Image 1: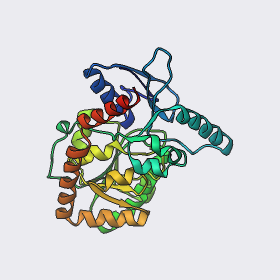
Image 2: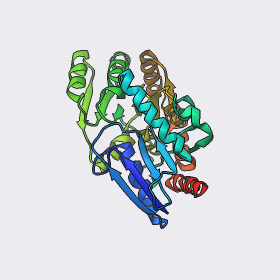
Image 3: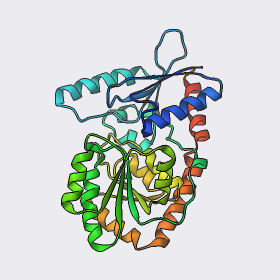
Image 4: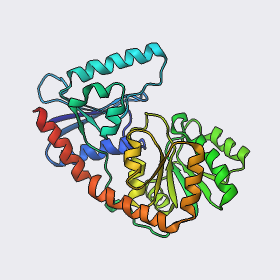
Length: 306
């Protein structure tokens, strides 16, 4: 079977989507499929996977992890019109969670075509470290929609109540602004920059908890949640469609900055609860988010449209 994946970024660029596309492509290739990955430098493009089965390049399957709705009205309408024209022609649409598809202003009109193939991780790469260190971790890009400023502000209140540091791993255009914010609020925060893969896994496995503060629909799943859960690190995430479905299997969701501060303090003060959430998250990854399962599901979608 001929498969084309289109991704805005691809390794060596580091990120959740890049990792997912690489692992999916390699897994499908190992099963005998002819897989090509096309990548470009434009940012925030919605389609990530296109499949074709004929000599004429007409896609049968469309996979979108996020359909951005953050532009001016005119551009937004044009983008939605283009997305709908693609979705109208696609035989199947792959979403990482059904809750995201149902809540999407665009995808909710195509639910009969939607098939769910969740993101995945190789759990053997992540240690079960039950002795945690005294820090809350954010791991991801330092850009506006990720909500890092909300986490820093929440940690100001946390650090008034308990001795708990903040570690922020990643790079991005907002890093300097966020560093200045942490200094201004007198939040004990360490910015590590981008971490080499081995160091990243060690850092996420040692964290007392991981927070994904994104409130934007541009965050449709949150692969970093799976990485933390695989290490038995509890996760906290803002209550947005898709992300909440994943986070609730190995942690807690929240809906305000104040609630986030309170959750962090409560979890810090309850090692037993953190351990319980850690075990629950690891089991969820083992049962629901393996690469074998993801590739099996993807192949079944392809066969459905052959």
